[in-house]
Length: 249
Image (tube, rainbow, N blue to C red; front, side, top):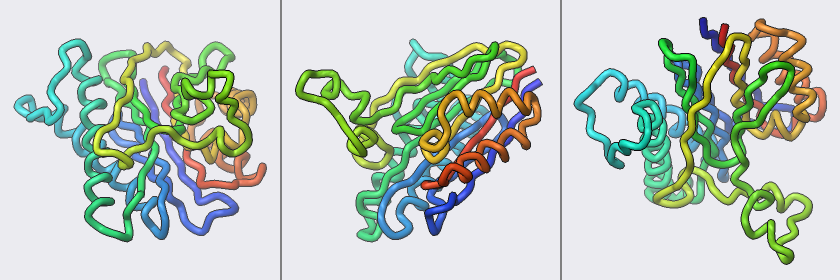
């Protein structure tokens, strides 16, 4: 059995929520938008809508055209996730180029597709929204932030990244016409909890705090989601906060 739950919150410091989430039929997406005026809201909404629409259509239509080609080295679900994220990137980029008020907008994304008949999930991400799995009393981050701190440049002797600069993104959807990223799959075993979240959560809560909350409310997804968001707010809530949980039994 697979259960899902998601929550997004404006936080304590922001006036509007630029995060968008999708908790669909095995399709889970978190997008954290960026840009002036309301551009971040627009970018994140385009992201979740485009990804959800393509993944759903690809699962229902065997004759669907694959605009970026079908990679035979990847699974069907991995091709669905890969193409959906690329389409979202193009949709945001096109909208930003067409309207001055949306110029420069973008969004992060972490997207997961869970097959109802297979104990595994497929995922892709761009930016610093994250994917974790909680298993056997441990929390493991499966994604690696696309940030200056994790860049090849930062690993050189001249590339020390300090302060707020370390969180500057090296990739986001909508910034360029094309975006490259990896798609991967991970097996599920009974008792696993998977967390998708924006940096509004992870900048407020360390991994140990996330593990403690997930373990405390083991299996109660709504309570866990609420507690994750409430705890991030209690520690300052400096950004919008989004969390989606998947539980496999």
